[in-house]
Image 1 (cartoon, one colour):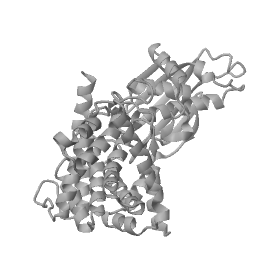
Image 2: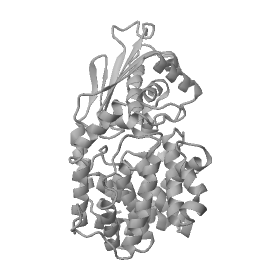
Image 3: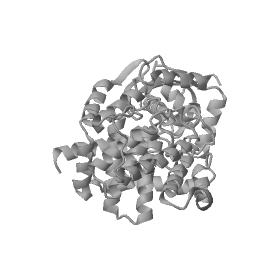
Image 4: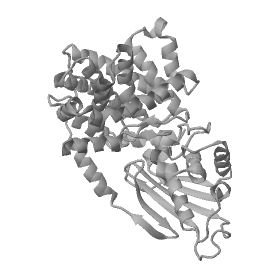
Length: 448
């Protein structure tokens, strides 16, 4: 393995990882869990096992506007509830920060009941932080009436943890007003972004085609996790049941073809995830829905046409890396719906599985950019499954057109002859260009 190949694999491992639940409330749960663990570690006596279940916590969580937008209406796994407050409470009573985006993997009925009690008693306070960062969480945890735990120390048992820029990047912690850890998140982000920005569609394709299979076979975990979510969505009655409706009406309405098959499976996985399934998704760029949308259409193609595992793995590497590359120009959160980026990645994977090369992949990216770029993100919610289905439909259309030699020309809109310039145009529009739209969306949501 070359050094550059190792760098690219590191990018994939950093951006493609399991996540249990929508990643915005999960980031809140992760910050709270870390703050509670800090209190446990600094207890002057040994805290009794299970003390968190009975502790009278007060949780003050300040989040960026985009975290609030994406966490207001999404289901929290295993609770039947939505929103950031219950996620924060669960982080306090059962969260394990060492598990990262799977911080709530140990939740059970007792933890859910205790978390609901804390919310009902007004012990959880969510506010908008005065920050320009799009992804920011500061969780401050206090323990009321904890004198029996801290009797031998003249400290007020409170701690905080701060997450910035990535959903699982804890950049600062404190106990009793004493800073325990503080890292330069901006410098870390700059290093990571420089590596991501150095990617190009041509290099991504070359890596996907030439990397040793044993070095990239881990990407098949995409299929294991996201296909399980899709099957769960088809079995249950999650959310709007978009995927189930497509599959059950495939013959009469949608047609018994690959597009409908891919739309149904992908939307079903989103249905389950957004409505509180306790199964993890394989995320991409900090989003479970993006991870589902970037992979499931490619997996659906492999299922329908009998694609062997190595070929599937290479297509998934291609689709995931294209999405990561585009997302590096957008930022983790924006007013642009993430399924635009993710479905662009899956369009490339489908083109490659059909025998397409660099030119056809570039055409697919341009076709997608000229099609659904204007789809806005109005928060994470069950309705996201409909956007996911639309993204998959556009991905298949774009792939088919690209394979026929059809590409939106550079005379149209934000399309450029250079695919990399087209990607940068999309990034500029979705980040800087849509800031006012992002603010207006949040204002509308908060005033309903």
